Amino acid sequence: MIRHLTVSAIILRDDHVLLVEHRKSGLFLPPGGHLDDHELPTDAIHREVMEEVGLTVEIYARKQFSHPVVATLEPPLTILVIDNVADPAVGPHTHIDLVYVCRPTSSNVTLNPNEVDGYHWVALADVADLPTPPELPSLILAAAKYAETAEF
Image 1 (cartoon, rainbow, N blue to C red):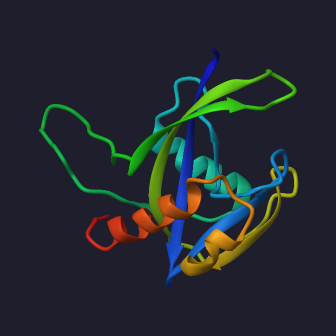
Image 2: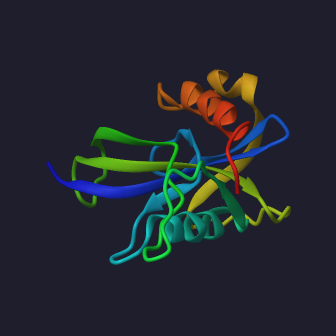
């Protein structure tokens, strides 16, 4: 099975999450996408969010380790293995998705119509009412809980 590294940004603001209407799947999803060759996952988060919705973000993270002789990156909340992703261009494949929890540092969403069909700030309690992947409502609630104790 072909595997692609991807990132997703769960962007939280005032008990709401930013979800985009994904063009290919028809589902509501967090902004995100594939890592470019040689790209750091944290750079991919910033790039994908900017490309899809025109926002800048900060990543919530719990520092697990630091040392003066090596660089460390903000860790994701979790890493999902999403099997059987349908894509007519490459065929079925697996996404190894690094899920980051973020907050916006800019306020004006600028939608890229080449990337997504729309966006919504959705109340956390209402995510389960939308067409999403089955794990997304629980994942977003876990992200909101994580954000309560994480740092920037």
